[in-house]
Length: 253
Length: 344
Figure 1: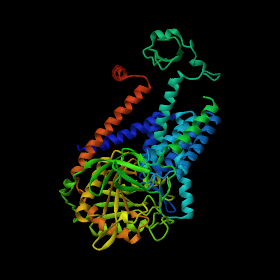
Figure 2 (figure 1 turned 90 degrees about the horizontal axis):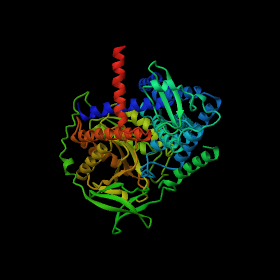
Figure 3 (figure 1 turned 90 degrees about the vertical axis):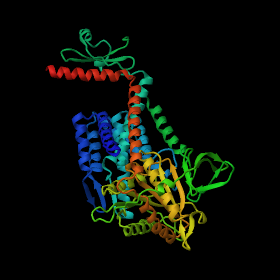
Figure 4 (figure 1 turned 135 degrees about the vertical axis):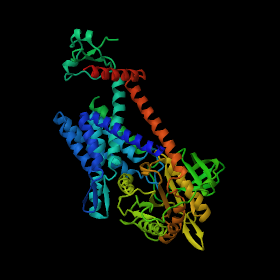
């Protein structure tokens, strides 16, 4: 096996693993995440010509449907509103940066980071701060670039015309890379913030099932697994009978 | 986190992004000298350079940007690189047989770039497309199949590479041995960017390779091969090679290259003559059938990808405060569940 083949296999595995982990953070089930990856992969071979614009199924239509699906899955109107707001504000930030800077080699190319990663990071952080979740960061990362690019290409087709491609890079299209960068950055920001804060905030909407002392002690005695994160410690117990208990233990060691 | 803190964070983040980049406040005609530590002129740049950027000048001296002084960039000499090995590269182009015709892709990220005496930027299609077409015709005469994308990526803003990325990836579906993004530079100095070949005034060519991608080594090798061949066949045509921060879609594959044919104060004719002549250099620098440069570069990319994956795993474990011991636990849980599954 040549180095190139090894590289291709590793790259393909990384795409599947990274893509799957990113989609996992958005709340999709394992099967749904694999289905989305499969659809993006299969759809990347399919272009739909709209006027002189080649619109790719895997790199544009599936990501748009994914964003709509994730927004529709929001648990409340507030969460959905935050998701839409995070797309709009992230799109505004991406547009602003792209107007201020030119990342080409003739001007500003020798800047600190490539726009593809910068926009993903920017949209991810902005969307995370507004939407306050990994899912919002992902939706904002993908949605903002899809929105900016669609508006730019539509307005340009009206004024100038000429052939154009939208999403034809499939898995490697700018919006999807930005979504993956966004979600992993949100993961780092979120985890770090929660680590510094010492656990989730306790408010009136704090789930009673997670409050200290709500787990039966007999389960603790029979538990085979315990996942301990931060302090107060969130304990996950799986009893021999397969029953699962989650509770907070402030004094646990 | 309350609302005010969140708002403050968003605003400060936007401010940091707006003002931290050296690209801020760039103007087309702002050219800056790049000088060595003694103050001697090395090259000119319209671009904000960053520390660590590498420039290989026409005499094969490798310079590294170390800072800025009095509005000039300071570079230090890393030494003279020997490109003679690239001249010995076997040139088995293998393009005679029908069906095995190697493919080259051409596209233009900056769709409005144009030359003198007209405006530097024109609405789509800019004059740069004529340079691309000249290069396409010249390469076809050499026996290559050229896929030339006339896609429009306007406006010329910070998202142009996001848009042209889709075009570059589409060109890769044709299995090209090289993909060239054809540009013109913005150094407002005719003399600096022209040379004379066979009594004709010709635009110089600058190669730009990006550092922020896993193919940087193979693209840099390709750039050095072109520089070596050009020095031999068309002495004086090379302005140099920039190995700089950025990506320029070069992560999509090996031998994805960006060429600057002259600059906006030159005439279109001078750029077209350069493109016509430079086709020989491109043809002579392609190791059709897999050259040594590609294999060694792919090998080092494998190492990098593995190192990155390990680093990412380490960060993940650190953030989750799990430590590497948890890997053992994971393995234990996995074998436990397998055994359990077998018992069931």
